[in-house]
Image (cartoon, rainbow, N blue to C red; front, side, top):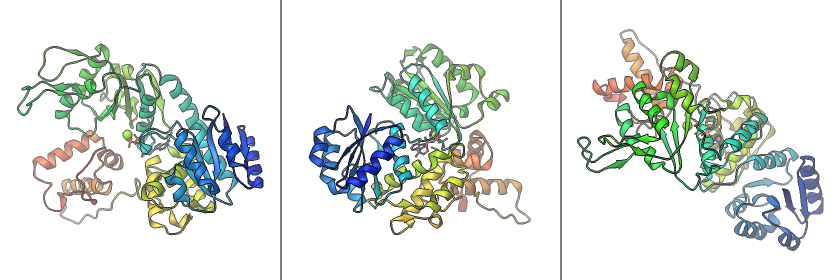
Length: 445
Ligand SMILES: Nc1ncnc2c1ncn2[C@@H]1O[C@H](COP(=O)(O)OP(=O)(O)OP(=O)(O)O)[C@@H](O)[C@H]1O
Ligand SMILES: [Mg+2]
């Protein structure tokens, strides 16, 4: 694949040609737009770097060849270029390294999917690229994939990516977050139910396995299900048959399974919380996603990707990261991984005026590692303290139970049991009947 370059200024074209050549890619330089338009071809080009002197070319290329990724460069209006289809905008004079990082991220990214958030997989780090190679090998097969990694490392985005690159990609992709749904409801969510199976079952409903027929099912946070349900899941995976709740005749379903966890599965098995045999069924292809702090080369390309994404979403101009900001981002440990980085970039993009983000604009440590403080006064019982801490932690993470459990250092199941206990005892009243700070009810995704 070669990378097309179009700029009226020959010296810029020469610089880009050298840069791209040094990266081991083949540059295809043009200073004339008609020649460029006559030669551009998605079979040989998947990336084009185009000056914003030629916004008509950017727009036209994107319309005719939507799969060509366009990096716009110029002195002008970033938003306009992004709106007509450029993936990135770099202000002139640009830094050689910025161009390199954008191109290397685009080269390793999969093609854009229908949903901009859900498909673009950015990586420039060797460790992730190796994982991506494995993913490319296994995606077209039927093998179950088991994705392990800390919260926010990108497990879900990888699961989607596998589906998109599988032979089942014309079929559905159905995800279910097993930590989010109370045990009592999980069975009917997963397997569906027959009309009249229980009070309120007015009509037959398909479960997630049936909905995933011909496609892929993501069992997200698999380690959170009870041992009883694990036994049922094992049977479904072995026999590829499900029993709708209230039905006595099993139904065959054709699905591919991907499971994720952010726990150390070995500990779960050792302590008897997760069935070994279910693990062996799921763990045919294990994928361990490294935390962001262990793949620092991903930090800046990801940050730039989020800048573009947020600029587009908010219809504001892209902002440039100063060297200081880049150093700050690179040095930080990112306990909340890519999600925390995305939040930090979003915060900086929204709160900062002007067209650059400097170190002072990056506010860190506001996601995972700052548990809300609780002061205890004499007379407070341990139970009250615990309840207060649990509820304010939930509030702090906008009701995300997974994050709350991680912060509190307890399992999501324990968290769920405690919340059930408060509900039963009516202890959600008064100040603690918290909706979350953003006014939304708890969501456990
Ligand atoms: N390589 C990547 N490229 C682009 N975006 C990414 C990448 N990795 C993660 N993200 C983004 O970061 C956020 C968190 O990713 P994701 O939801 O896949 O993490 P997760 O590992 O499933 O987290 P959790 O364990 O909390 O469910 C998402 O918004 C996702 O789009
Ligand atoms: Mg997830």
